[in-house]
Length: 87
Length: 99
Image (cartoon, chains in turn red, purple):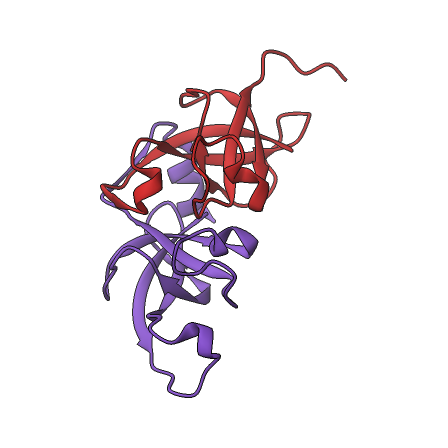
């Protein structure tokens, strides 16, 4: 699981049919000090996150587990909205 | 997933028998301003994308999670055609231009 910041969303009408009802967000990976790390990625939103929010996301094939479908070609999904980070 | 642009097609006659019927497209990665980056992948199409279209590509084992690519030797699949990007935090757009 990684930390990221939602920076925008992606509009796609034509997508793999199992994903029809899901939002896709642009996520900038960040570290625990809120510094950006690496390139922005696109993740499926399962929790209702919005632009500017710090979120937790997961990657690889487990990214499909939070979705209520058996199979979907998703390699990143947002699974939580972060309230605070203590370090 | 990453953002990319379809720039071409790959034709292959002799291939793994599981891949018969697959459409291979060359997808070049894009940044938030639609500028092309250097890296590209050959991806199997699952949505009917064509040349010049902006698409999303899922990679790794997730790309085997479609009806067609299940248990097949595939590690990149096109899973959406992008209509519009809405980057609410504008500073990220300008940041990429500077780089």
